[in-house]
Length: 52
Image (cartoon, rainbow, N blue to C red; front, side):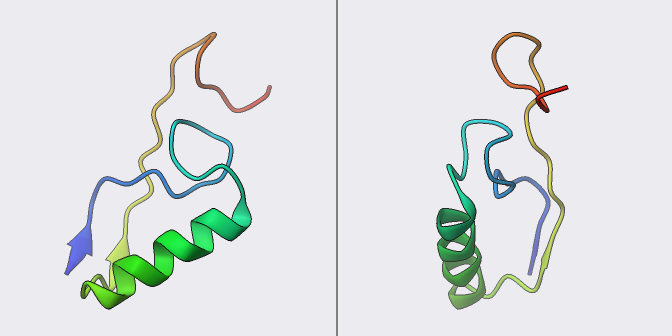
């Protein structure tokens, strides 16, 4: 299965808060049969950003 929308990149949007949480999310996805991910974080200036 391919997950085409997730929030796994730590600290970018409203998903994983840190690397530990991202790894937990990856483990959960793998257990559910996900074999590939397309990382699609939300970008919203002033709310979610890349820190630049």
